Amino acid sequence: MRIVTSLFFVLTAIASIAQDSDLPNDFLSKDFHKERRAKLRVNLPANSVAVFFANAVRNRANDVEYVYHQDPDFYYLTGYKEPDALLFCFKDSQRAANGSTYNEILFVQPRHAQREMWTGRRLGEQGTKDVLGFQQAFNNSEFSRYNVDFSKFDKILFFDFKNDVRDNPRDSSDLYDLIIQFKSKVKYSERNAASLAVEPPKNNLDTKELATQMANLRGIKTKEEIELVRKAVSISCIGQIEVMKAIKPGMSEREIQGIHEFVFKKYQAEDLGYPSIVGAGHNGCILHYIDNYKPNVTSKELILMDLGAEFHGYSADITRNIPVNGKFSPEQKLIYELVLKAQEEAMKITKPGTPRQALTDTCRAVVNRGLVELGIIKKDEKHLYFPHGVSHHIGLDVHDRGGPNLEENNTVTIEPGIYIPDNAACDKKWWGIAVRIEDDYLITKNGYEHLSKIAPRTVKEIEDMMKLPSVFDNFELPDLKKVNEKSKSGN
Image (cartoon, rainbow, N blue to C red; front, side, top):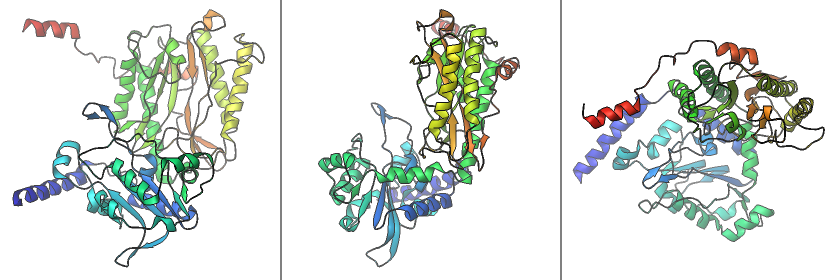
């Protein structure tokens, strides 16, 4: 027993030292998260508590899990990146059994030397206090004994459960068990959950209001958040630029994806904001095409590239379209410049107070007029060549929380598109042309800042960029067929 205990403390000490030295030092500060909780608390209804659960661990297959990604609301309020955790934010101070008061409490997964050896470091109760600044932080095993009378609150605000959380039979305090314990404490049932979704609550459980509260908070970005978004956008733009210089006929969609994502990693972006979309020719007509399987892109095709780096949790969302051979065909140029015109018309009304729907309406009017002029549709004809809206918030989610009208310090996209699949009801010369131009913007006091302007947008800018040499021009890997033949021969 003495040996095991000693080993635990040695591993704990080593992990703590490594954790201090191995991680970047430019994450959002604990003061940021504390201020966000204070802001939420101000806006909560009287005599209420807001409850947040960490994201579930998702199984990829057998004993392999997907890389863990924290729930954005949970991260926004805590900075905590680990699973199996639970946060309470109280409108009013609560009194603990020892007479002290508190207005927030966080339950986290405990330190565990053996599990940390396999799956990585944990903050634990004390680390959460030291690193994240929580005064009331406890191991999640303590939640079952947490004895607040929830019936005294006028409102308990939380996001309803999706019933897709796996139970880890080796852990009696994992997210599955935390949810069960919470449901028992607040007298939640599946029957009253159904009623909450369609009518005002008849008890103190509220699964609707928290979405509005968090949208109001997260939609307006702080200075610290804007810098992280700006960095994610710049990284993503450089990825587009490097592919413009490197692309050649015969490359695969996946190889092109790989160049983008190599650039992301080179700049220490931890993740992708969403699965990368790299669609050559008619594949670009699939709005969320993520197969990226085509082995050889041809010289006559346009390729649509919609990719965004996620840096310290904040995501960019940028789309560019380039001709694989470096020169737009006459038809490709006409469609491209029509989409660009639509985007630029929307940019003219991009300022505080403008409804995001107005950006879509503006783009749609320009595109429809242009398609009529090109003979692709008849006047007032309904069609699916432009099937989506053009603007959403970006941040901790690529489709981030935020309001319907533009406000100062929103970060948003404008992304009109035209998609003409093979066998469309128009002249064959237009078939297989897919164009989406997507840029990211910071809404300022009187207008906007175009965050992604360094990624070439006009036909001339793109064609000029594609003439430049690439750092990948001389990058070649061994021929796999020859490698395998050599392996088989034993030489």
